[in-house]
Image (cartoon, rainbow over all chains, first blue to last red; front, side, top):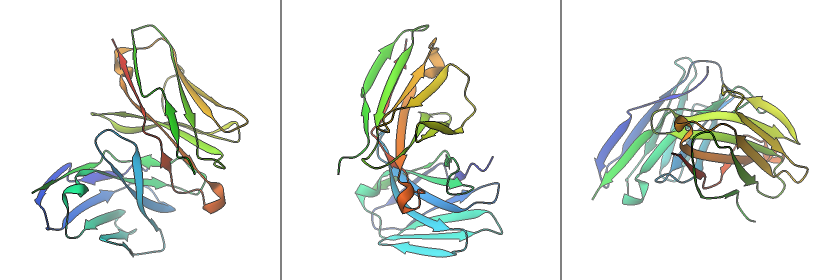
Amino acid sequence: SQQGEEDPQALSIQEGENATMNCSYKTSINNLQWYRQNSGRGLVHLILIRSNEREKHSGRLRVTLDTSKKSSSLLITASRAADTASYFCATGLNRDDKIIFGKGTRLHILP
Amino acid sequence: KAGVTQTPRYLIKTRGQQVTLSCSPISGHRSVSWYQQTPGQGLQFLFEYFSETQRNKGNFPGRFSGRQFSNSRSEMNVSTLELGDSALYLCASRDPRDGGEKLFFGSGTQLSVL
């Protein structure tokens, strides 16, 4: 299975600090995506990085991908209370393949 | 453009009953995927439909089935409900015209089996 696994399972940091979450997966992938979920609602797409990319930025988000280690990291800089949510990585073998999610990291931003 | 719509939002059933959940994708999206989310197992992939055909399938028993209509709306059915089927069921659509990689999720149907 190419299911990703996030690490840590839970993370609490002070507002303004940076948050880093990691994702490891098992098989070759076409791309890796990160999603956010607020309190039992639907997931929202954050960023996609392709297998031939090493780093990507979007606002306060920075994603890295190391295909040799089959791992990715999501960095949220200058965290805010609104960043409190669960974060999931997701992978697919190719464009038409099913997209499989990890179990997520629960991020809590302390005021 | 309207987002992905799931109905109903909440559902309470008893063991042995069956249930049907509905999902309307974003206009123009021909792919609909279904996921089951529980606290212990995270998001588990159920199946994906594309142009009325099941394109991908997860590892769920045959009690879980789905279909897609010509307008891309999809339904998921669970027969002979078990307590362990209590979960948040999420559907998501994607648009092959923009690469088809990004999923757009609905708010989910919270199913409780008593």
